[in-house]
Length: 621
Image (cartoon, rainbow, N blue to C red):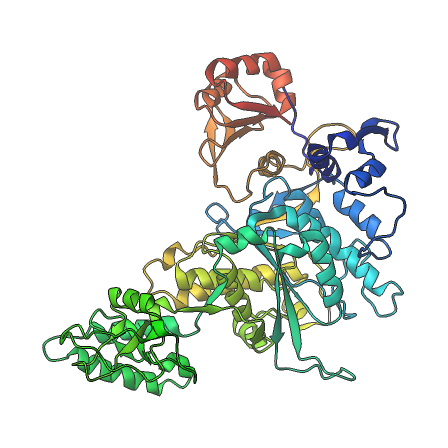
């Protein structure tokens, strides 16, 4: 019986295999540091394969720094670690599809390579800005101004993480990265190298409207949001890259309220009058939004715009075709410079009833713009928004100094991904991204799922957070999700679907591998649930799959997502249990190797499955 590896995949070997598909002649054999024979790359031959000229020198355009090669190796090196579930810190562990993963994000990204390869729709991160006061990671990234390799250390920290992150993005996936002036240049070069220049979606300048008071020279009051796609062509094909106009939904909802009152005494004219009064009383609406001040006989909100040619010069001849009034059958008066649209477009507007005619042909018609068809606008490269959510966290009684702004986060999640995807944030901090996902799902009935990753960085004992009982950053993030989720449900309790809102999360923490290093035995402190999630990682199955436990002939059997995986880690497994599992014909089955060897015999187990479930994959740990 084949054994599960119970370790993250070997990225280097995977890369060699990919190169071998393109250039099989550059694959060679070499000895590793232990003298073992392994596959490798003939780099000189590979260079020549990628050049139309004779390769003689090393000169080329490249982005590099001190320690780049070590950073590449660090990202590719497998680790003997796993993710262990922590049910007591989770919320709705059995039913939720969200994850909160605690540990160094480099380790977590490696551990997720099997289960979430090509599966994440959006990555939204706010990494350290390299200001001298950021978090410290175990890979020796210490961003203090006294460090002689200031930029190099920052690049070495982020580079392997972004390379691993790219593997997780789906073909239509996108990554958004918040950054400021300290590392924007290096970040853009790094992303161009990892994701490809052709996949640069753009960079948004976020005007936070709060200049840095300690700056010398030009005081920066803006930050950047760098956006790259896994595959820009596929991303643009599957996403409109537009954001909803801020108050469109509110306007339409109010119009529906007025329209629903219409009866014999309260006419459409009355509804339009009251709706226009309401529109004019709303100080938060822009001029463009206030123009949508009319309701038609179907209850749709619209605005009327002149159909005259808007430019000073005369329109082309095709813009002077007479427009016939539908009742009098007489031509309407032509604007002096012509119509706004050519004849073919005018006929299409007529067909769709989007031209507003007067009572007769003497009144010049207008163009009808429906708000429901114009609820979105292009994403601007300049974003105006305040730079802090301290007040929001204060309401939740969550102490955190520099949280991401939830409304900025919401706007970009809504604009750059669908309503049912997975979003990953591996610099979670106070878990703003998770908060934004839950809030958006409540607003539009979406089913987005989040994966938060956070290093359990210890909190200063003098801080407010420590005095409130928090020992590390991840404890703050988890508590914010709990409180924010309950508040969102309470604020939306009148919505029909609010009870379906997923405000839970499964907590899993990075730990050493489940198998002992000296002897290939399972560690004594590992539970069935630990082993089950280790198997999910090794077999490349999502960690959010639902599973149940049941007793069969006195032993515990775990069933994941109906028949996707069945596991039994009992020390002694009766043959009747093996037969029962086989008769259910699951896709995958895993047993404890020692149990099979001691009590049943591997051959017997394999024979049972060959007979009762020939398509089931059976492995042991």
